[in-house]
Image (cartoon, rainbow over all chains, first blue to last red; front, side, top):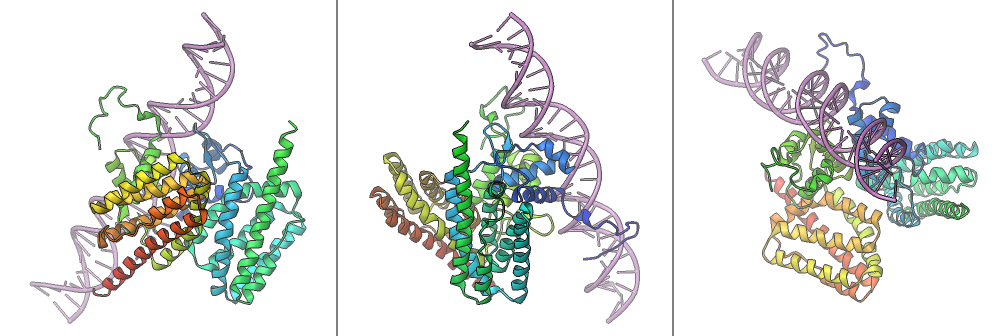
Length: 234
Length: 234
DNA sequence: CACAGCTTAATTTGATCATATTCTGAGGCG
DNA sequence: CGCCTCAGAATATGATCAAATTAAGCTGTG
């Protein structure tokens, strides 16, 4: 590998290195994960071309990827929307999260170290202050960040990738839940989880994770039922 | 494969209805699932443009989707290959299949009817004759077809989609297994599975599925170890 | 004189864009 | 009321640009 020939090229701009479709994908993914796009909302290619100031090809590729992730869905015609969860969907997502995430917690206990532990503590603190301030976007960001950090520690890339895709499916609905009931009464099993990790107790970690997941999915279900009830007053 | 027509053909065949990227995706997906692409093999855009006689954009989109599926992986540079499984990967895939597929079998018992049952029986017969004839591609096709049919019966689209993606990850290695040891000593728990479905016994179905999955993943693991052992004789 | 290591040229492949084509949905007209 | 036309959005193509791998060339040394 030879480097910096720099005959005429001023080494200057570093960030030009990454492909545009990757940036578009990550930005769009973040928008979905952190509640900027509501369930049912239409997503058009040209709209994204403008709002992201990107070309059409990268946007198309990012959208395909997200459709494959289940984060977007294509209607029979060629319209693309953020999917609306049915009760069936939530039930399946719940089952899968219950099956996979406790295992990630279990595996994380085998690999956790001081750095990882303090990282998680920091994230949990940030999460709690977001909750106290009623900062919905902050809550969503930090909550996902906490889980993502934990998954990284578990060193199970395929498992983590699978679970991450599930988050993309329910995240928009999670945003709706917070908009409905605020962030105040959000349960938090993260403290239990951190304690279990510190004690290197895999089963306690798995249990705490299972409870955390269960609570989250319960809220989404409840919100869905409330929405259905309101629907009847049309 | 039909070709060399389209240039001067009139309105020609009907299938103009489907978008090209969809066709490319399905064709490429089939190639991966049924062993036409070996683990580690490079996949180039331009190569596919030629071999599929498609444009560049549809091919790019299909590749993005398959990367998101985990069926292809992008190297640090921008080359794309069929991923090579490590033992770690197989272990994670095994865990996930064990967690999810028995549940699909369980759910299928609630929805199975006469038509579904006879469809599965037909598929199992086709599978067995492929095994007897040592027809590797037929085995891979029918084996996947059997499972896919079962998942459809389970009526759990998100769960099925997730499991389907796992298949894309281990299918290339499954092809290697068959090339190594032939199809003769492939275990077959499908008969048990069909019996359990006919009896509407969810736990028996889940057990048969768990055993089927276990056997398959065991073979991949063994093949991987053998390959590693051979590696040392370089 | 042959060879190793490094630089440079050439080719291959991926990324992006501008543009043409096709399709969908809606509104006007018979 | 249904058919037809039209605008807008998505799909697909091929050209162009950039990056990276590979091949070739050069120079200095043993």
